[in-house]
Length: 127
Picture 1 (cartoon, rainbow, N blue to C red):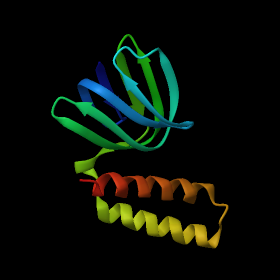
Picture 2: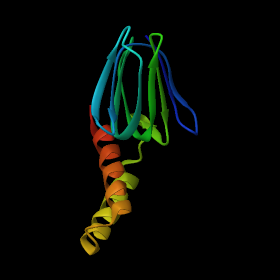
Picture 3: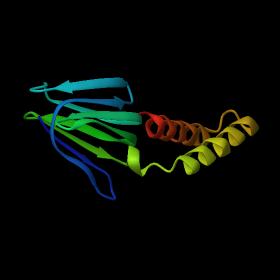
């Protein structure tokens, strides 16, 4: 199936894949060839693309996914390929979010920042 993954900054992937797994706001979802039409809001999490040259992992921070006509289109608010993740910055962001949450456990902005930092660390440290 044809897969396009686009963020505001760039096209992160455009090509053929045998499978796509991504995180929606309702949980993880997988797409295979000839999947039924689908539209969903993306959450914060890892997206994996099974391309010809291996599995490509990306950190995704919101957006939308659409499946139609054996094509998957992912429009992400913010996305980073594993190689583009700054692990030191992600750790600093995680520490900052933890500090904010310890001061105010109901800080939704800090909770989202923590989840985004943790996702970047997870994707960036995977082998």
